[in-house]
Image (cartoon, rainbow, N blue to C red):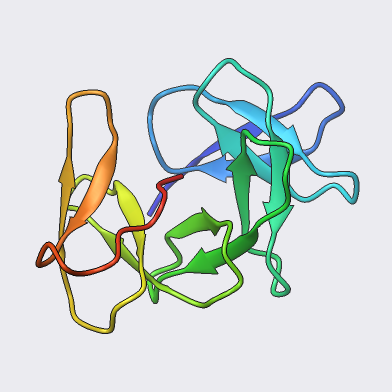
Length: 122
């Protein structure tokens, strides 16, 4: 699919697949992500260089789904990244699939039985 090349002030670029503009945010080793919020972030990358934008100062583990949609996980245990139709994702610690349920202010949980564990949303 076509993309829009978006560059940071120091000419490091990423490929943007959405039509909306973004701010290119880069890590110290010039790995970049596209940030759709005006606030700065820390670019956090997994071992295979898949990156997300982290708005907290604490480090995290970048966890990705099979189709490379990633979230920032603040727990050491692995999880399955589960996404809604509009690409809002949460970290699911159960192997069973779930429905991602979001509130108006984009706070999301995984719609599994109430006894299941919920995890924090990035």
